[in-house]
Image 1 (cartoon, rainbow, N blue to C red):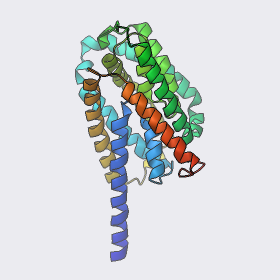
Image 2 (image 1 turned 120 degrees about the vertical axis):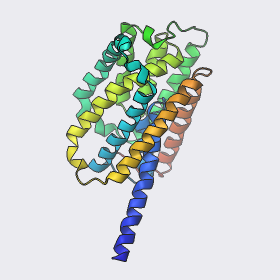
Image 3 (image 1 turned 30 degrees about the vertical axis):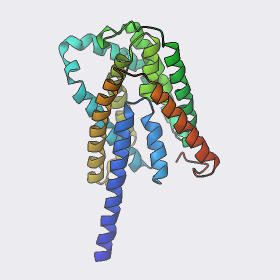
Amino acid sequence: MCADSLSINRTLFVDLIQSLILGLVEGATEFLPISSTGHLIIVSQLLGLKQTDSHIAFEIIIQLGAVLAVITNYRDKFKPQYFDLWVKVAIAFVPAAAVGLLVHSHLKTLFSIHIVAVTLFTGGIIFLAVEYYLKNREPTVNRVEDISYKQALVIGCAQIAALVPGTSRSGSTIIGALLMGINRKVSAEFSFLLALPIMLAATGLNVVKHYDAFVGTQMLPLVVGFVMAFISAYIAIRLLVKFLGSYTFNIFGIYRILLGLLLFYLIYTGFIPPDTST
């Protein structure tokens, strides 16, 4: 009995450490333009975790922690006077939601580190190119409330690219916003708000599809992952907004390129197995 108890405690300890790590990664990367999905795939691979139904259920829960961080940071935007802003968010939500529903069953085949390596690297190049293009151009929109319906629709169309793992939902929407003349800080803030309907919809769809995975799931690791995701996402949002008051997105482009190159190297040297999609 003592040996069995020790084994159970050791397993729970490992589960809690993994929950802390995954919650931290989800929260810290969800709203940065570096792809939370890509980072979760990488970290899960390094931890030896498979894309089982229980693992998918865990990721659903920690994403809700990140959603709560947006609601907490932008609770003032839920007042009646911001109704028009939420109409624009709804408009931006539609394109990716519609395409996502059509291709959802086929997306799992793209969940591999090989795909992530390509999209991280390519996205980094795009960020540097966009920042170079905007270097001598002044933004025309400096408040999130001033984003037009047309601009919201374009941003929503840009979000479709994020269906491919490693592209980054926030990255694709921010690039779309920047190219529409919206300043960096406002681009990020609109991306945060747009995360609410798209993440809640994706979470709801996954709950319906994998509801049986929650049966028998240990609650403590789920709670730990959720809390860690909330805390890290809350901090990441505030730090990013402050950072964009003085700096560009170039650092994120460089990070993406370097991480993509590192993944290419690890794949080439065999450190990452040939098939990492399951």
